[in-house]
Length: 167
Ligand code: NI
Image 1 (tube, helix red, strand yellow):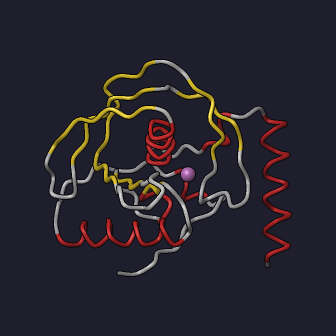
Image 2 (cartoon, helix red, strand yellow; image 1 turned 90 degrees about the vertical axis):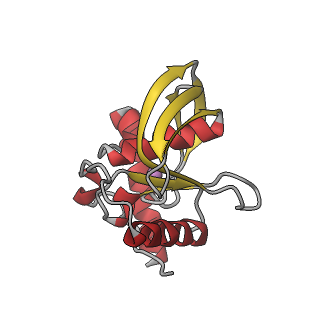
C-alpha cells in the first residue's frame, strides 16, 4: 500500500467531474486500499478519488470510532433524500477549517462495491453527511461552495494563515 497526495483547495483539479468506473480490476482494489491508508493516516473520515487526483466515481469512508467499518462506494447515485440536518463539516482538502452545512438527514444510495457488485444502502445522520460531502467531490463541488461569500472568504483566509504558519 502507499499513501497518496491529497489535493488542497484552491487546486483547480478539485473541480474535475469524475467519470464512471467501468473496469473492476486489481488496480481499482489497490486504489481503494491506498485511499483508505491515506484517509486513516490524515486522519479523516471520508475521501473521494477526486481528492487524490483520480477522476473516477469512487469514494471511501469510515466514521466508526475504531476505524473498523470501512465503506466503499463505486459509481454512487442518490435514489432518495429526506429530512434535513446541519452538521459541522471539515475536509482533508481544506486543512484546519470547519463550517456548518445543511444537507439531507437521510439518503438512499445505489452503488457498486470494488468487485462491481451493485447494492443499495441507506445512510442517516453523520454518515449521510459524509456520503453527500464525498459525492459532491466527485461532481467537482466542495463544501465551502454552500457558504455565503463573506463566510467563505473568512474561512479561506484562516486556512491560508494556518498553512503559512505550518510551512
Ligand atoms: Ni472533502
